[in-house]
Each structure stands twice: as C-alpha cells, then as structure tokens.
View 1: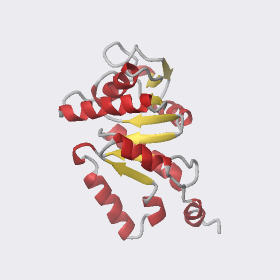
View 2: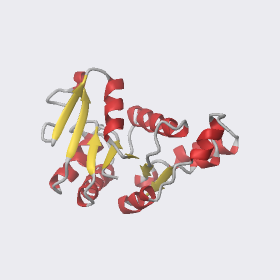
View 3: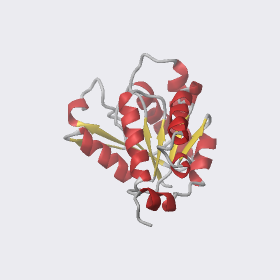
View 4: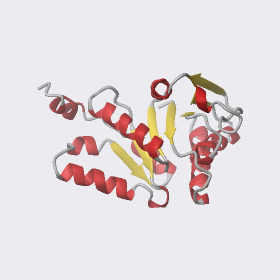
Length: 193
C-alpha cells in the first residue's frame, strides 16, 4: 500500500477524542510513508486527519466537490486539492487514487462511501483492504448489524472478513497489510463457478 483513502466526518460538533484520533491517524500514515487521500475538507475529523499528516511531512491529496470548494469548507494547505463537478466523480477519483480505505467516525457521507467501497470489493471491482478505526466504540453497532446480516444469510462470511477493525491505527494498518481478498467468495456470489 502506498496510499490510503480516509472516509470520515466533517462536523465540528463532536467529542474531542474523534479529532485527536484523526490527527493521530494522519500522523501515523505519514510516518509510514502512506499518502493520504481524503475529501478535501478542513473541518471535523476530516481536517484533523489532513493536519496530522501534513504536520508529519506527509503527502495529502484532497478531492472535493465544486459546491464545497469554499473558504469555509475546503482545506487549501494540502499537497494537492482536486475539484470535481459531482459527488459521484469525487468518490470515483478518491477510489482510483487509493490502495486501501479507512473509515473513521462520520455520518451519512462516511457510511455511503464505506458501504460503496465494501460492495465494490464484494463484487470484485477491487481487491483493496478496508478498515474501520473504532474510536470510542463508534462502529460497534454497525458491526453488530453486519454480523446479524451474515447470520441471516445476506452476507458471506468471507465478505464479512474483508472488513478490518481496530482501536489503534497501528493495529488497523497491520490487519490491512495482511488482507487477502476473498476471490472465491466473489465468484460464488457472482455465480461464476
């Protein structure tokens, strides 16, 4: 892995531990020589991740949609800021630039990006690792819902195992580096064998 796309929230009205953890993740990505790809914003966890990577001398590429490219929202101190016309093009560009994906706490946008990325892995569009940084137990209920879907037969166990989760960035990166894409489950799910 040379670059990690981070999905996360941009709200400032959150517990300070979320921003602290975001900044720490950014720093650790930079210290491990991993380029940060993210949504280009300067607020919330999103801005904290970028600031942490930049402070540690990392390369940071933001991809922001045109309507959000404003002084109040966009982070203009990045290595590079790309602007796309639509949110769909933004997500496609972030996906293309990344070798792996990490979700930190966030809202609907974060969940949308995360689940699209998981689904693309499920159907074989990519074989890249996906991780959740479980700050303050944020993803516990989400994982419980996913585990329930697996128990009820809607998710293959191999697809469920595509998702790494850890409370510390170093643990999460270790899990992601050991990722093995379930190609046989993809073929079975897509009815190719």
